[in-house]
Length: 280
Image (cartoon, rainbow, N blue to C red; front, top):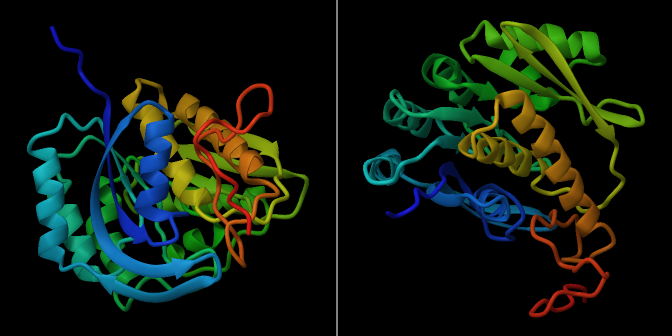
């Protein structure tokens, strides 16, 4: 008797630098023991310095990828990242009306500050997608954009905005407070049962590209592996912390580099066989 393979689907853009988007999601799934399928929404030309160009996939091609995966694979969770325009949002929502647990990281800008979405995008998200989402994972700027407000400045503001976002349809909202001041990175999980606080020491590193993608895909992987959402959040935050720590001090390019989702070093601190220096 064959064993059932744990499978997650990522619907996101491709990062040519390998730091965020589909590449980060698939690396995270693999590191956590989950098979990753993908539907690519956009091609981006980017590196550690920023985004040079974006080409969005036609909505019908995005839908065809999702339908092909869901029509064959036993997908237990879906992670959504960069969608980019209203047409893609509508196509994804139509495909996911009967989907399994869905985690949505509402990517609107790259970590470099480059815009990754077009006109009508936020309105389409509210109309088509948010009512289908089980866990929305916005950072402070994304939450503010969805609500047309200023970003929260403290945990009370985060909790209030999380509740306001829940009113738009998602079952739960994980408000990511990494951009607040303080020695801890605090996230708040806002659900029907209240607010749960998750704190971790703030990481000081140049290489933070793909942090949000990695967190949301790690949460999806936890759901695939049978964890309840709060425990999936705890483990995902720990995984991101480890990925940041592993990338600390490494040089990938001339700018801000990505996390390292898979171990580069063994338990004795020796570089793993097959890995080469990534610095210049």
